[in-house]
Length: 407
Image (tube, rainbow, N blue to C red; front, top):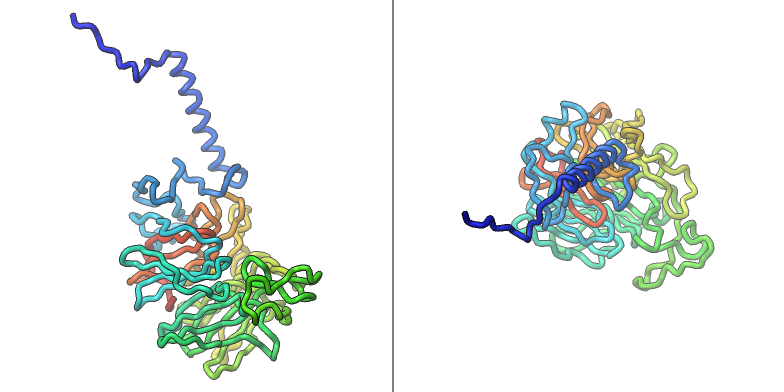
Protein backbone atom coordinates (compact mmCIF):
# COMPACT_ATOMS: atom_id res chain seq x y z
CA UNK A 1 0.00 0.00 0.00
CA UNK A 2 1.31 3.38 -0.95
CA UNK A 3 1.76 5.78 1.98
CA UNK A 4 -0.86 8.56 2.16
CA UNK A 5 0.60 11.95 1.24
CA UNK A 6 -0.05 14.79 3.66
CA UNK A 7 -0.40 18.37 2.43
CA UNK A 8 1.50 20.22 5.18
CA UNK A 9 0.33 23.57 3.80
CA UNK A 10 -3.17 22.72 5.01
CA UNK A 11 -2.87 21.42 8.58
CA UNK A 12 -5.76 19.39 9.87
CA UNK A 13 -8.15 21.06 12.32
CA UNK A 14 -9.01 19.32 15.55
CA UNK A 15 -12.64 18.93 16.58
CA UNK A 16 -12.06 21.48 19.35
CA UNK A 17 -10.55 23.95 16.85
CA UNK A 18 -13.48 23.45 14.48
CA UNK A 19 -15.89 24.24 17.29
CA UNK A 20 -13.89 27.36 18.17
CA UNK A 21 -14.01 28.57 14.56
CA UNK A 22 -17.71 27.82 14.34
CA UNK A 23 -18.28 29.73 17.56
CA UNK A 24 -16.47 32.77 16.24
CA UNK A 25 -18.52 32.60 13.04
CA UNK A 26 -21.72 32.50 15.05
CA UNK A 27 -20.62 35.54 17.04
CA UNK A 28 -19.82 37.43 13.84
CA UNK A 29 -23.20 36.49 12.36
CA UNK A 30 -24.95 37.58 15.53
CA UNK A 31 -23.05 40.87 15.54
CA UNK A 32 -24.01 41.50 11.91
CA UNK A 33 -27.65 40.90 12.78
CA UNK A 34 -27.46 43.30 15.71
CA UNK A 35 -25.80 45.96 13.59
CA UNK A 36 -28.46 45.62 10.92
CA UNK A 37 -31.10 46.25 13.59
CA UNK A 38 -29.29 49.28 15.06
CA UNK A 39 -27.25 50.88 12.26
CA UNK A 40 -26.81 54.21 14.05
CA UNK A 41 -24.77 52.58 16.81
CA UNK A 42 -22.23 50.96 14.49
CA UNK A 43 -18.68 52.19 15.22
CA UNK A 44 -16.17 53.14 12.58
CA UNK A 45 -16.48 55.22 9.44
CA UNK A 46 -19.87 55.60 7.75
CA UNK A 47 -20.98 52.74 5.49
CA UNK A 48 -24.12 50.91 4.52
CA UNK A 49 -25.36 47.95 6.51
CA UNK A 50 -25.35 45.56 3.58
CA UNK A 51 -24.89 41.92 4.54
CA UNK A 52 -22.40 40.65 3.54
CA UNK A 53 -20.34 43.89 3.78
CA UNK A 54 -20.02 45.65 0.45
CA UNK A 55 -17.02 47.21 -1.28
CA UNK A 56 -18.11 50.05 -3.61
CA UNK A 57 -14.62 50.61 -5.02
CA UNK A 58 -13.52 49.56 -8.50
CA UNK A 59 -11.64 46.66 -6.93
CA UNK A 60 -14.70 45.41 -5.09
CA UNK A 61 -16.62 42.31 -6.04
CA UNK A 62 -19.44 42.85 -8.56
CA UNK A 63 -22.99 42.94 -7.28
CA UNK A 64 -24.49 39.60 -8.17
CA UNK A 65 -27.93 40.14 -6.64
CA UNK A 66 -30.92 40.54 -8.93
CA UNK A 67 -32.13 43.41 -6.74
CA UNK A 68 -29.37 45.65 -5.40
CA UNK A 69 -29.25 45.13 -1.61
CA UNK A 70 -28.95 48.88 -1.01
CA UNK A 71 -32.03 49.81 -3.06
CA UNK A 72 -34.88 49.41 -0.61
CA UNK A 73 -38.60 49.36 -1.43
CA UNK A 74 -40.38 50.83 1.59
CA UNK A 75 -43.70 50.61 -0.28
CA UNK A 76 -44.68 48.29 -3.17
CA UNK A 77 -45.14 51.39 -5.37
CA UNK A 78 -41.35 51.79 -5.44
CA UNK A 79 -40.89 48.44 -7.16
CA UNK A 80 -42.08 49.95 -10.44
CA UNK A 81 -39.55 52.80 -10.15
CA UNK A 82 -36.42 50.80 -9.38
CA UNK A 83 -34.59 48.70 -11.97
CA UNK A 84 -34.25 45.20 -10.48
CA UNK A 85 -31.15 44.08 -12.40
CA UNK A 86 -29.19 47.35 -12.06
CA UNK A 87 -26.55 47.85 -9.37
CA UNK A 88 -25.39 51.03 -7.68
CA UNK A 89 -22.03 52.03 -9.12
CA UNK A 90 -19.37 54.36 -7.77
CA UNK A 91 -18.23 56.21 -10.89
CA UNK A 92 -15.50 58.33 -9.33
CA UNK A 93 -14.03 59.46 -6.03
CA UNK A 94 -11.59 62.19 -5.09
CA UNK A 95 -13.56 65.34 -4.23
CA UNK A 96 -13.47 67.23 -0.96
CA UNK A 97 -17.23 67.86 -1.11
CA UNK A 98 -19.15 66.93 -4.27
CA UNK A 99 -22.27 68.93 -5.05
CA UNK A 100 -24.60 70.09 -7.80
CA UNK A 101 -24.60 67.25 -10.38
CA UNK A 102 -26.23 68.23 -13.68
CA UNK A 103 -26.65 66.29 -16.92
CA UNK A 104 -25.85 67.77 -20.32
CA UNK A 105 -28.06 65.82 -22.73
CA UNK A 106 -26.44 67.03 -25.95
CA UNK A 107 -22.86 66.46 -24.77
CA UNK A 108 -23.77 63.30 -22.81
CA UNK A 109 -21.72 64.26 -19.80
CA UNK A 110 -22.24 64.90 -16.11
CA UNK A 111 -20.88 68.07 -14.53
CA UNK A 112 -20.63 68.67 -10.80
CA UNK A 113 -18.95 70.96 -8.27
CA UNK A 114 -16.11 70.14 -5.91
CA UNK A 115 -16.76 73.20 -3.77
CA UNK A 116 -13.68 73.36 -1.48
CA UNK A 117 -11.34 72.64 -4.40
CA UNK A 118 -12.94 75.53 -6.33
CA UNK A 119 -13.54 73.50 -9.46
CA UNK A 120 -16.15 71.80 -11.60
CA UNK A 121 -15.57 68.27 -12.87
CA UNK A 122 -16.96 66.41 -15.86
CA UNK A 123 -17.64 62.70 -16.38
CA UNK A 124 -17.91 61.49 -19.98
CA UNK A 125 -20.42 58.73 -20.55
CA UNK A 126 -18.60 57.12 -23.47
CA UNK A 127 -15.45 56.11 -21.60
CA UNK A 128 -16.03 57.14 -17.98
CA UNK A 129 -13.18 59.66 -18.05
CA UNK A 130 -13.24 62.43 -15.45
CA UNK A 131 -11.47 65.73 -15.99
CA UNK A 132 -11.48 69.26 -14.58
CA UNK A 133 -14.18 71.19 -16.41
CA UNK A 134 -13.73 74.65 -14.87
CA UNK A 135 -11.17 75.96 -12.39
CA UNK A 136 -11.57 78.27 -10.65
CA UNK A 137 -15.33 77.93 -10.47
CA UNK A 138 -16.15 80.61 -7.91
CA UNK A 139 -16.61 77.80 -5.39
CA UNK A 140 -19.73 76.85 -7.34
CA UNK A 141 -22.38 74.75 -5.64
CA UNK A 142 -25.59 73.94 -7.51
CA UNK A 143 -25.60 73.47 -11.28
CA UNK A 144 -28.38 72.79 -13.78
CA UNK A 145 -29.20 73.26 -17.45
CA UNK A 146 -32.01 75.39 -18.83
CA UNK A 147 -34.36 74.50 -21.67
CA UNK A 148 -31.88 75.90 -24.22
CA UNK A 149 -29.06 73.68 -22.95
CA UNK A 150 -27.14 76.44 -21.17
CA UNK A 151 -25.45 75.68 -17.87
CA UNK A 152 -26.53 77.57 -14.76
CA UNK A 153 -24.25 77.74 -11.73
CA UNK A 154 -24.51 79.13 -8.21
CA UNK A 155 -21.21 80.61 -7.03
CA UNK A 156 -20.51 80.75 -3.31
CA UNK A 157 -17.36 82.84 -3.58
CA UNK A 158 -18.76 85.53 -5.88
CA UNK A 159 -22.21 85.36 -4.27
CA UNK A 160 -24.01 85.20 -7.60
CA UNK A 161 -25.86 83.08 -10.16
CA UNK A 162 -24.29 82.81 -13.62
CA UNK A 163 -25.18 81.31 -16.99
CA UNK A 164 -22.60 79.85 -19.37
CA UNK A 165 -23.67 80.80 -22.87
CA UNK A 166 -23.41 78.50 -25.88
CA UNK A 167 -20.64 80.66 -27.34
CA UNK A 168 -18.53 80.29 -24.17
CA UNK A 169 -19.24 83.68 -22.63
CA UNK A 170 -20.64 84.10 -19.12
CA UNK A 171 -23.70 86.11 -18.07
CA UNK A 172 -24.26 87.24 -14.49
CA UNK A 173 -27.94 86.55 -13.84
CA UNK A 174 -28.12 87.72 -10.24
CA UNK A 175 -25.70 89.09 -7.66
CA UNK A 176 -27.86 91.59 -5.75
CA UNK A 177 -31.41 92.07 -4.53
CA UNK A 178 -32.69 95.54 -3.65
CA UNK A 179 -29.14 96.80 -4.02
CA UNK A 180 -27.78 94.33 -1.44
CA UNK A 181 -25.31 91.55 -2.19
CA UNK A 182 -26.67 88.00 -2.19
CA UNK A 183 -25.50 85.59 0.54
CA UNK A 184 -24.28 82.54 -1.39
CA UNK A 185 -26.72 81.15 -3.98
CA UNK A 186 -27.05 77.41 -3.52
CA UNK A 187 -29.33 75.79 -6.10
CA UNK A 188 -31.04 76.99 -9.28
CA UNK A 189 -33.70 75.53 -11.59
CA UNK A 190 -35.16 76.68 -14.90
CA UNK A 191 -38.85 77.26 -15.67
CA UNK A 192 -40.33 76.86 -19.19
CA UNK A 193 -41.32 80.54 -19.18
CA UNK A 194 -37.64 81.47 -19.30
CA UNK A 195 -37.28 82.36 -15.63
CA UNK A 196 -34.82 80.89 -13.14
CA UNK A 197 -35.59 80.20 -9.49
CA UNK A 198 -32.83 79.95 -6.86
CA UNK A 199 -32.19 79.67 -3.12
CA UNK A 200 -29.83 81.90 -1.16
CA UNK A 201 -28.71 80.43 2.20
CA UNK A 202 -25.49 81.55 3.96
CA UNK A 203 -23.30 78.44 3.56
CA UNK A 204 -20.69 80.06 1.30
CA UNK A 205 -19.72 82.52 4.02
CA UNK A 206 -17.01 80.27 5.38
CA UNK A 207 -13.36 79.45 4.72
CA UNK A 208 -13.96 75.93 3.41
CA UNK A 209 -16.58 76.59 0.73
CA UNK A 210 -16.15 80.26 -0.14
CA UNK A 211 -15.01 83.30 1.83
CA UNK A 212 -16.09 84.65 5.22
CA UNK A 213 -17.64 88.06 5.54
CA UNK A 214 -15.43 91.10 5.83
CA UNK A 215 -14.59 91.99 9.43
CA UNK A 216 -17.75 92.59 11.43
CA UNK A 217 -20.02 90.59 9.14
CA UNK A 218 -22.16 87.78 10.59
CA UNK A 219 -19.70 85.00 9.67
CA UNK A 220 -16.68 87.02 10.82
CA UNK A 221 -18.04 89.06 13.72
CA UNK A 222 -14.72 89.11 15.60
CA UNK A 223 -12.81 90.15 12.49
CA UNK A 224 -10.09 87.59 13.21
CA UNK A 225 -10.52 85.82 9.87
CA UNK A 226 -8.87 87.28 6.78
CA UNK A 227 -11.28 86.66 3.88
CA UNK A 228 -8.77 87.91 1.30
CA UNK A 229 -6.17 85.18 1.79
CA UNK A 230 -5.76 83.08 -1.34
CA UNK A 231 -8.47 84.99 -3.17
CA UNK A 232 -8.67 87.27 -6.22
CA UNK A 233 -8.21 90.97 -5.36
CA UNK A 234 -11.94 91.75 -5.60
CA UNK A 235 -12.87 89.15 -2.96
CA UNK A 236 -13.03 89.74 0.78
CA UNK A 237 -15.02 92.96 1.05
CA UNK A 238 -18.58 91.60 1.22
CA UNK A 239 -20.70 91.37 4.34
CA UNK A 240 -23.90 89.42 4.56
CA UNK A 241 -26.83 91.80 4.14
CA UNK A 242 -29.90 89.69 3.32
CA UNK A 243 -32.04 87.06 5.04
CA UNK A 244 -32.07 83.53 3.60
CA UNK A 245 -34.67 83.84 0.85
CA UNK A 246 -35.74 82.27 -2.45
CA UNK A 247 -35.84 84.38 -5.62
CA UNK A 248 -37.10 84.31 -9.20
CA UNK A 249 -35.10 85.82 -12.06
CA UNK A 250 -37.60 87.06 -14.64
CA UNK A 251 -36.68 86.77 -18.36
CA UNK A 252 -36.48 90.58 -18.33
CA UNK A 253 -33.71 90.38 -15.72
CA UNK A 254 -35.85 91.57 -12.81
CA UNK A 255 -35.30 89.66 -9.57
CA UNK A 256 -38.38 88.96 -7.43
CA UNK A 257 -38.59 87.65 -3.88
CA UNK A 258 -40.76 84.50 -3.88
CA UNK A 259 -40.14 82.99 -0.43
CA UNK A 260 -38.89 84.56 2.78
CA UNK A 261 -36.81 82.84 5.45
CA UNK A 262 -39.87 82.95 7.72
CA UNK A 263 -41.63 80.64 5.25
CA UNK A 264 -38.64 78.36 4.57
CA UNK A 265 -35.61 79.12 6.75
CA UNK A 266 -32.21 78.40 5.20
CA UNK A 267 -33.58 77.15 1.84
CA UNK A 268 -31.30 74.74 0.02
CA UNK A 269 -32.32 72.40 -2.82
CA UNK A 270 -35.39 73.11 -4.92
CA UNK A 271 -37.24 71.69 -7.91
CA UNK A 272 -40.55 71.90 -9.76
CA UNK A 273 -43.14 69.18 -10.16
CA UNK A 274 -43.37 67.82 -13.74
CA UNK A 275 -46.24 70.22 -14.58
CA UNK A 276 -44.45 73.15 -12.88
CA UNK A 277 -47.49 73.79 -10.70
CA UNK A 278 -45.67 72.96 -7.47
CA UNK A 279 -42.32 74.05 -6.07
CA UNK A 280 -40.46 71.88 -3.57
CA UNK A 281 -37.87 73.51 -1.30
CA UNK A 282 -35.55 71.80 1.20
CA UNK A 283 -34.85 73.60 4.47
CA UNK A 284 -31.57 72.85 6.21
CA UNK A 285 -29.75 73.89 9.37
CA UNK A 286 -28.15 77.21 10.22
CA UNK A 287 -25.10 78.37 8.31
CA UNK A 288 -22.11 80.45 9.49
CA UNK A 289 -23.18 83.59 11.29
CA UNK A 290 -26.83 82.77 10.70
CA UNK A 291 -29.05 84.67 13.13
CA UNK A 292 -32.33 83.69 11.45
CA UNK A 293 -34.78 80.97 12.50
CA UNK A 294 -32.76 78.12 10.97
CA UNK A 295 -34.23 75.10 9.24
CA UNK A 296 -35.25 71.78 10.73
CA UNK A 297 -34.04 69.50 7.94
CA UNK A 298 -37.37 69.12 6.18
CA UNK A 299 -39.05 69.69 2.80
CA UNK A 300 -41.78 72.20 1.99
CA UNK A 301 -44.12 72.41 -1.02
CA UNK A 302 -45.99 75.37 -2.53
CA UNK A 303 -48.50 75.89 -5.32
CA UNK A 304 -47.16 77.99 -8.19
CA UNK A 305 -49.77 80.41 -9.54
CA UNK A 306 -50.13 81.77 -13.06
CA UNK A 307 -48.75 85.05 -11.69
CA UNK A 308 -45.63 83.22 -10.39
CA UNK A 309 -46.77 83.81 -6.81
CA UNK A 310 -46.48 80.92 -4.34
CA UNK A 311 -49.37 79.91 -2.10
CA UNK A 312 -50.72 77.08 0.08
CA UNK A 313 -47.33 76.32 1.57
CA UNK A 314 -47.16 73.23 3.72
CA UNK A 315 -44.72 70.74 5.15
CA UNK A 316 -44.17 68.00 2.58
CA UNK A 317 -42.01 65.73 4.76
CA UNK A 318 -40.14 66.02 8.04
CA UNK A 319 -37.59 63.55 6.59
CA UNK A 320 -37.63 61.39 9.72
CA UNK A 321 -37.04 57.73 8.86
CA UNK A 322 -37.13 55.12 11.64
CA UNK A 323 -36.53 57.93 14.11
CA UNK A 324 -33.46 59.15 12.19
CA UNK A 325 -33.22 62.69 10.82
CA UNK A 326 -32.36 62.32 7.12
CA UNK A 327 -31.55 65.93 6.33
CA UNK A 328 -32.47 66.81 2.71
CA UNK A 329 -30.40 68.91 0.32
CA UNK A 330 -30.79 68.37 -3.43
CA UNK A 331 -34.23 67.59 -4.90
CA UNK A 332 -35.45 66.27 -8.25
CA UNK A 333 -38.80 64.96 -9.53
CA UNK A 334 -39.43 62.08 -11.90
CA UNK A 335 -42.08 62.12 -14.64
CA UNK A 336 -44.62 60.45 -12.31
CA UNK A 337 -44.28 63.31 -9.85
CA UNK A 338 -42.31 61.38 -7.23
CA UNK A 339 -39.73 63.45 -5.35
CA UNK A 340 -36.15 62.17 -4.99
CA UNK A 341 -34.22 63.84 -2.16
CA UNK A 342 -30.64 63.43 -1.01
CA UNK A 343 -30.24 62.29 2.59
CA UNK A 344 -27.66 63.48 5.10
CA UNK A 345 -28.09 61.33 8.21
CA UNK A 346 -24.58 61.96 9.51
CA UNK A 347 -23.32 59.00 11.51
CA UNK A 348 -26.62 57.12 11.34
CA UNK A 349 -25.23 54.28 9.28
CA UNK A 350 -27.55 52.98 6.60
CA UNK A 351 -29.62 56.17 6.27
CA UNK A 352 -27.34 58.30 4.11
CA UNK A 353 -28.22 58.26 0.43
CA UNK A 354 -31.52 59.07 -1.27
CA UNK A 355 -35.16 59.14 -0.19
CA UNK A 356 -38.03 58.75 -2.66
CA UNK A 357 -41.46 60.19 -1.82
CA UNK A 358 -44.71 59.88 -3.76
CA UNK A 359 -46.55 63.14 -4.62
CA UNK A 360 -48.49 62.93 -1.36
CA UNK A 361 -45.29 62.97 0.70
CA UNK A 362 -45.22 59.28 1.61
CA UNK A 363 -41.79 57.63 1.71
CA UNK A 364 -41.83 54.75 -0.76
CA UNK A 365 -38.16 53.90 -1.29
CA UNK A 366 -34.58 54.46 -0.20
CA UNK A 367 -31.11 54.14 -1.68
CA UNK A 368 -28.31 53.53 0.82
CA UNK A 369 -24.86 54.94 0.12
CA UNK A 370 -21.64 54.61 2.13
CA UNK A 371 -21.24 58.41 2.15
CA UNK A 372 -23.44 61.40 3.00
CA UNK A 373 -25.37 62.39 -0.13
CA UNK A 374 -25.63 66.10 -0.93
CA UNK A 375 -27.40 66.25 -4.28
CA UNK A 376 -28.97 64.24 -7.10
CA UNK A 377 -29.97 64.57 -10.75
CA UNK A 378 -31.39 62.44 -13.52
CA UNK A 379 -29.34 61.84 -16.64
CA UNK A 380 -28.18 59.41 -19.28
CA UNK A 381 -29.49 59.38 -22.88
CA UNK A 382 -32.88 58.16 -21.67
CA UNK A 383 -32.78 60.28 -18.48
CA UNK A 384 -33.37 57.08 -16.51
CA UNK A 385 -30.13 57.12 -14.53
CA UNK A 386 -29.94 58.73 -11.09
CA UNK A 387 -26.60 60.41 -10.39
CA UNK A 388 -25.76 61.04 -6.74
CA UNK A 389 -23.09 63.44 -5.48
CA UNK A 390 -22.10 61.99 -2.11
CA UNK A 391 -19.31 63.58 -0.09
CA UNK A 392 -16.13 62.60 -1.96
CA UNK A 393 -17.72 60.49 -4.69
CA UNK A 394 -20.19 60.22 -7.55
CA UNK A 395 -22.58 57.26 -7.60
CA UNK A 396 -25.16 56.21 -10.20
CA UNK A 397 -27.97 53.71 -10.57
CA UNK A 398 -30.37 52.99 -13.43
CA UNK A 399 -34.08 53.31 -12.64
CA UNK A 400 -37.39 52.28 -14.16
CA UNK A 401 -38.51 55.90 -14.48
CA UNK A 402 -37.23 59.14 -16.00
CA UNK A 403 -36.40 62.52 -14.59
CA UNK A 404 -38.68 65.46 -15.29
CA UNK A 405 -37.19 68.52 -16.94
CA UNK A 406 -33.64 69.26 -18.06
CA UNK A 407 -30.47 68.93 -16.01
